[in-house]
Length: 563
Image (tube, helix red, strand yellow):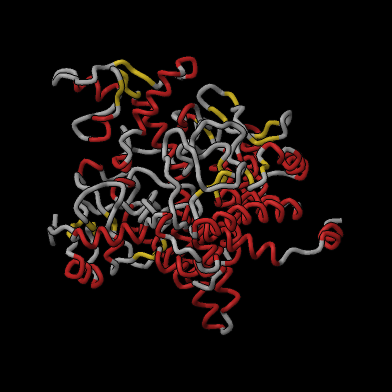
């Protein structure tokens, strides 16, 4: 291991950054700038790079500022400058990584930031790194705002992750080496390609762009292979599941010492709803009992989070932690969609994941056709049709007229109504009759402030009454895809109004909103209780919704065009 420097970031810098990143409401100016100015400025205030001292700080894990380089690359100039400017400790990863899961977290005892070559936009608040699925929506906003170079650089960062870290990570921190995030790479690539294609005038520019697309195609193939590997296979359904290679509670919950104990308390208070997530073990295990605790729950010797995750002799099972980790790969952390606190996520083939992969396969067919690879295009189309058949066999409920997740362990479809029922419309997997049935049930999720995540108020942030920008935009896109422009624009107006009203109140844009009350002042029982300020994907989706509203066709013309 190459130990380059071992000095902490000065306290003054940390304090200044925290004040910058998480502005408290009382400090917001009485007269906030126009919301589009806020968003335009936010691309810069939320940008990070290896030349920026703010990038290394991690609000989630309190430790020395530490940056890791891939073992095999030369020392980049910007990292050398970062050491001297910010007093950052730099180390190399202990092994060269070629495939996902090759490095063990035990080999990296001190968590840190993973090097990326290009500037990137972070979500905001406690999320001070480049995330997998957040970045797709952020990229849409950057492209809408003319920040094409920054958007392309973020896609290039994902290529770098695939090349040097084994795959697209949840985010570029070492404790995310065990999982990815929802697969949006093909969508990101095409968003950038389509945007740049409009600007490419000369044959030379078009040739360069085509070469970039060919390079992107090779990385997308490698990313796709992760999702069709054994660990992500949902039994013999032909569908995929979310899965994390790690064990025990996640390290990034070190800044929320109550999450796992709160989960235990809820299960103890609702024993009839506990699927078997609890195991009885001593609160203070002896040296001889530690192995049993590690075998049935988690290892207190390797996880400080585990050491706090017990209540009155009750611990969470090892399988619960597998589901908890898989839930975090899904991005929906947490809800009750896959059992209490989604502790059974890894037992399900999800509607969202499999429709993202269907779209991925369709995207790859399009890219192969553009690159004049007809045999590849045929193969991708074949994969897409096989997945579409499986989606409609396992995930479509014709009686309810909804797409629902499938528990491949019990061979039963879920009854949990979730906003992901609209994903097949966006991805193109639903036929006209199915799309019409899903549209007819839009009222189940429809509220004055936009679409809620679910029909069940669990008290967690990814359920009713909360609405989030990414699923809102996919739902709006799905409605557009099937010709329901009226509902698409209406939902865009409602969620835009929610964002605007709250912005007028406190001068901030948040990660989520209560779409029933239209407020950003939230009451969350447990789990992530904060409502972070920033906020990357909300900023981006707001711009996209404003563009949709501005380009709305008259109802008569829209209706006539569909006849």
